[in-house]
Image (cartoon, rainbow, N blue to C red; front, side):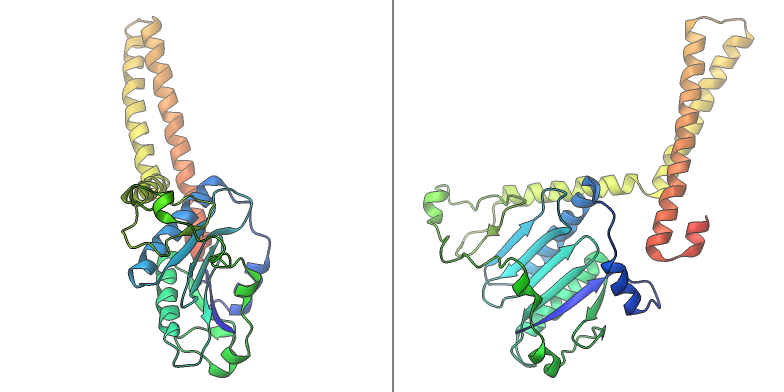
Length: 288
């Protein structure tokens, strides 16, 4: 028995039936950029979830494009489970009644996932928006979908190993994406090398996303326009003075190349605005 809360992207006023139908539709093929962005979001969710927990945790993060799951998070004792997909997320935990302390963990996890993804929470037990409350009758009657997923703690007893022998330096092994990471029975802090690598990955992804923002693309476009115009003007001045040597044609070629680059930047900016408009449901943004 468990209680599960689902989170989906939802536009203002959109009916939940439409949201659920959209989730059932075939998703576009995942690319490396989408995978990296999704795993980075999962790592942020993981870090915030860990801040409020004292029990051991196991996680799994995707490393290839074969599935639609970015990451899985599961605690050992309370059974809190968080899964992040390419177009949805799930938060669940074993249901032990309305006074069960684990329900507070579920609420906190839902808030964290919603804040990191922008998704809205849906309670499939009652078929409506999750408002922070739990329906006891529906919770007692609902069967967990977690049983259909891989239990990250299923092999805990069988795979218990001597951590001191595995890591004689006393450090926790750096998490390897695509494999289950177990921090149970570890009294020391997490390996700072793993944390540093995670922060570097998030920063790299953040910079990449910033470069693809419409405003950033327009700024680059205007830079190309100005630089291309200056170089082209120098080339034209040399032509007007009767100089048709190699350097003159080099100026003209570079100027034209920069102006073409500016046109491409402005085109990409319009495409990025259209994509943002489709994701936000803003028809005006799409028209622009």
